[in-house]
Length: 99
Image (cartoon, rainbow, N blue to C red):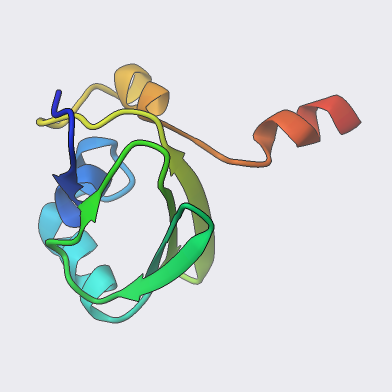
């Protein structure tokens, strides 16, 4: 695992949010990606944008909005159970308390 940052397209592919890096890059290039870091939100259209632990990644994929917080930076594609440990939905804990 890297200790600094990983390319956004590679991270999205490694944690199985996209089937291929090329699909991830296409969505990012289409200006459908935002990164929130230290309370500041940045739009990016660069697949090479570096994500870091603690960043919140927002993407639009197939007319559905995904918002996930980066918990780990895998260097390779992971199995589905391992990939699920690399991110979380920021409001998931709050929603589970409301139920």
